[in-house]
Length: 192
Image (cartoon, rainbow, N blue to C red; front, side, top):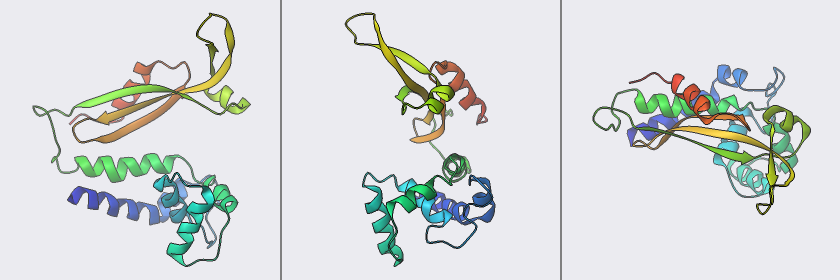
């Protein structure tokens, strides 16, 4: 239980740190003025991963903070000022590093048990995404005739099976080789 509390404390420290904000915003102008949606609040709202509508998410945050009303559009636009690297860094610093910091974690015969798996993910169909990740042709399943192409990505996750922690995740091109993505994840973590 102490590690969970430590992970939360480290997350709070990182989210409030000026250096962390500077590294994980899209431009130097983002999150510089004192606004109703500061970097830390936007990051926490995204981390909550609510299934509610954007407006309901914003309304709930307003009730916590006793702020004036905000629109879902304001929240949505502000989210785009965050880099995805903030979530990668938080996972590594607050979760993974905290778990392994004191050598008090579950092992099997002294070894960590790590699993890796990849899944194809259908992406929104627009030109930029198709160029970045590529497409995969699809059929109706009854004939070999190609019906069209869809943009896909290969998501690969390195997971500590015994401690139930995702250590690394990678989003690769549609036709990426799963073993290459797995090797990249393994290389980013030293053996213990």
